[in-house]
Each structure stands twice: as structure tokens, then as C-alpha cells.
Image (tube, rainbow, N blue to C red; front, side):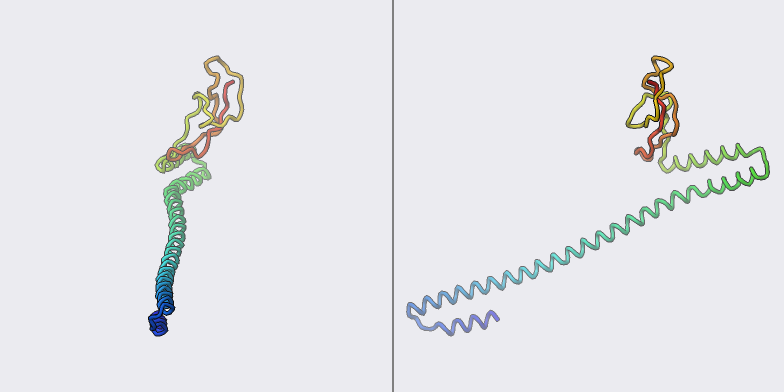
Length: 181
């Protein structure tokens, strides 16, 4: 199309008079502008295409990331549950033992507790030892405070109502404690 316009414009201007020369110059300028417009249009189309492809790629990335995150959460829960299944079996055996009236029930419960605690410890769980330690609001939640039995116990944890736990160096439950005042 651009070539047809150029041909038409050049046929229009063949006279060498000053008026015609000026018109020829304008025609050449118009042709240059039309060429520049065509170039800009092609660049715009190319940029639009790149933008659409980039947007589609980003959208696919978001969908893939969400899917991977859900898969990771599923896998993490599955791994934890699988490690707790033998402990559930031990509880079933302890329950049957208690129903039959055997004396070994408390020993069985102690064994199950140790297995559960070691399985959770293996997953990165650690319990906080709070009783006797200095009260630290970053680690403890004070339920109540009582008068201190001695001067050296002031500001210390007297009793732990509920143990606190840390999972991989992150507090997942604060220890609920009684503090000496």
C-alpha cells in the first residue's frame, strides 16, 4: 500500500516549477511520515504481542504457584499424619488393655506419650521449660500473678499452666504461666 501511495505521489509531481518543487517536497515528507507511521504501527503490534504473551506467562506462573503451594501443604500434612499413625495404633492397644483390666495401662500410656513426643520432636517441635525461669513476655503469657514467696523469686515463673511450644525456632504456642510479684 505504501508503494502505491509513493507511486501516485511521484506521478503527481513531475513539473520542475517552484510550486511543483514545493509540492514534490511536501509529497516526499508525506511519504516519509507514512513510512514512519507504518514502522510505528508494526512496533506497536509487536509490543502488544509481547505484552499479551508476558501477561499470559505471568498468569500461568500464578496458577502454577498456587497449585504447588496447595500440593506442598497437602504433602506436609500427609507426612505428619503418617508419622502419627503408629502412635494411634499404640493408643488403640492401650485402650483394649484398659478395657480388659490389665495393670499395665499407665505404663502403656507413658510409652504412647513418649512415642508421640519423640515423633513431634523429630518434626521440629520443642517444648518450653518455663517454671523457675525469668518471666519474658516474648515467650510467656501471664495468666495471673501471685505474691512472691521469697525476694529471689520476684519476676520469675512460679507455675506453668500450659506448656509453650516452638516449631523450628518459631513460637507456635506461648506458655501460660503464673508469675511471682
